[in-house]
Length: 252
Image 1 (cartoon, one colour):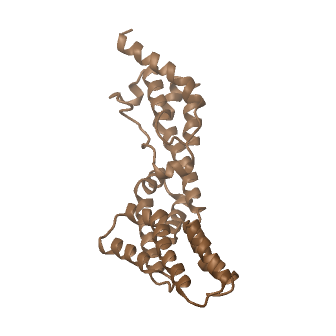
Image 2 (cartoon, one colour; image 1 turned 60 degrees about the vertical axis):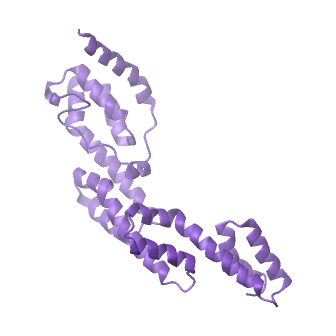
Image 3 (cartoon, one colour; image 1 turned 120 degrees about the vertical axis):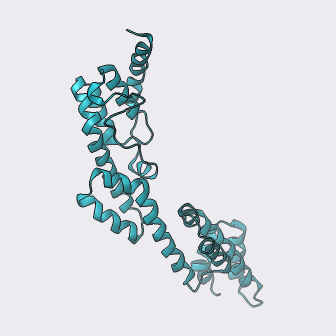
C-alpha cells in the first residue's frame, strides 16, 4: 500500500469515532448556512467517479460529508449507516442517499422557517409551494438563494408598513429611508429588522419621554415613571413606558 493511501486510511479511521458521536446541526442553522450539494462524481478531492472508488476512498468521502458544516439529522443518520455497511452501501449513499437525506433535512429546515413569528407572507407562500412536491434540488436552491430573496421582499414590505404607522419617529424614518434610497442589500434590510429598528426606535422613544418630562403640569407619579424608564434605558423599558407605563401612572 502506498504511503499516501495509508495516510488517508489512518485519517479516516481517526475521524470516525468523533463524527459518529457528533451532534447534528439544527434545521435552523442548516437554513442559515446550507450544506454542500450531494455528490455523485468527484468527491472530497478524488477525481474518480463513485463507481470506480475503492472502499477506502468511499469511506473518506462519506467522512468528509459528515465533517462539513451544518450537517443535518437525516444526512448524519444515513452517512453513519453507510459507514457501518458494505462498500455498496457507501456507494449508494454517495450516489443517491445523500441527496435524499439532504432533502429530508431541508424539509425540516423549511418547516422551521414557517414556524417563526417573523416569517413574512412571501416566504410562507414560497415554502408552501415547495414542501408539497418540490424536488431535492428545488428545496436546496430555495435555502441557498431563494429564501434570502423572498425574505428580502418581505423585509421591504415590512419597512413600508413601519413608515406608515402614526407613531413611527423621525430616527426610524431616517434609517428606513436611507435603506430604501441607497438600495440596501438583503443583509442590510435583515440587520435593520433584527437590531437597527430596535435601536432607532429607542432613540425616538427617549425623545418622546423627554417631551413628556418637559410638560409643566404632569403628575409626580408620571414624572417618576418617566425618569425611571430613562434611567433603566433599555429599548424594551422605554417602549413599555410609552405603550403602557405612562397610562398606568395616570397621564400623558
